[in-house]
Image (cartoon, rainbow, N blue to C red; front, side):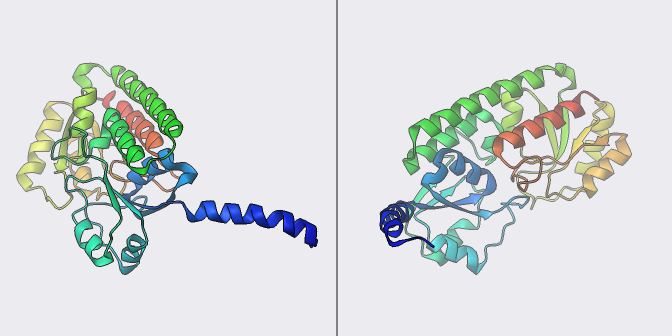
Amino acid sequence: MLNRRALLLTAPLLAAASARAATKPRVVATFSILGDFVRQVGGDEVELATLVGPDADSHSFQPTPADARKLARADVLVSNGLGLEGWLDRLAQAAEFKGKTIVASRGSGVDDDPHCWQDVACARRYAATIAAGLGTSSERAAAYDRRLAVLDGWVRAEIARVPAGKRRVITSHQSFGYFARAYGVAFNSVRGPSDDSEPSARDIARLIREARSEKIKALFIENFGNPALVAEIARDSDAVVGPPLYTDALSKPDGPAPTYEAMMRYNVSALVAGMLKN
């Protein structure tokens, strides 16, 4: 048991620690990738909660009353924008959220496709926008930006290992538009940018013909996607379904993509291995 002198010495330290904790802004990120950006640039300066967790789809997310309570207590909301979180306005209204909003895509020069983070250069702009909005350590933000610059160079070097004629991929979901433009890979998808867009029989037949004529062996689904349609294309085109890709969500902490950096390295390694079989 602590004696009285030890308690007297310890009390001010505990009070100071409690005061520091009380001043941390409570930040809610809409989904796991944005949550990782907040964690990387905010560190222990923020108290972070994420609405759409690992291995979950931001497009089809259905908020619960617990999510409304979480947002009601928040000081800052970090969202992607560009229509990704179609449920967010209703949730913010239900929560009567009156805090600060940071839209990560704002000022990033992006188009209507919300999956901008698939280009690491865009992810760097996201992180900078979040860091500026939070007002957290500039040193931490700068260190993270340097890591992302290294990651971007690594992605380009890995893709360069694949001959240009082999850089073709079929995926279950149209989420690689920015990746395609940034790194010179041609993607075709079973579904559009939202999982709500169901492909027709004609779409499936077209992809099967393309896979056959272009000798595309690289087929991929997302970590939360339905593999049935991609499996059908693989079966009818003699292609090979690769490991699940992490596009709109990170993996759980014990998975292969618990952070944005790990996600990109995992995806690129899988894509390269698949394209080399084309």
